[in-house]
Length: 264
Ligand SMILES: [Fe+2]
Image 1 (cartoon, rainbow, N blue to C red):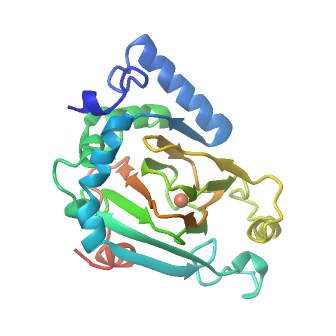
Image 2: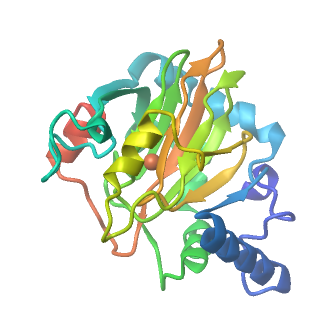
């Protein structure tokens, strides 16, 4: 069934030991090293996209968690050595509507792709990890975020080394993925550079156009990024996959409450 919905001729995730599969992994590894990300455009065939979103639509409309928070780029109250009014700590707003794996119909395409062993094996190969495992957490394993008109994901750095997303629906306008590579390092937090970015004065800001159906793997720990506010009637709908090097990873009830508004 995934054979019908995914373009595995173009992206042979299920044949990593074939020459085409080896070439795909090599291309993704080189993109990651050079750009901090790789994209598999059109991984979900265009004909399968409306169904993938339609299956989630009732839950998105009736039971999504409105996740709204005011935060700074660090998602932390204060940073040692920085004055509270330092421009690097400017408050920004993130808002979206989130649903969790336990709310999705079992035959939902995004769940099938997440649980497909070839996907974890492919991602592990591109990231140079021996193995990746699906998460045990019934809420956190797969999330779908809907960004409606005026909603945005604001400036932040990621907690995890890699973020894996699958764009299911692109908006008419806005919703642009913007990023600034290597804004900081482990030894240099570069607060002046962070302030310049937030104030719109960073000439090295880049944008990445993403079409619906694209798998994106992004290294976001030291690359600041955001998604600009959505414009128009069509929301941006994106699935986020969580894989870990250890099996059976769970969030704590506190983490679940913070991200989803409920402990279980
Ligand atoms: Fe992120």
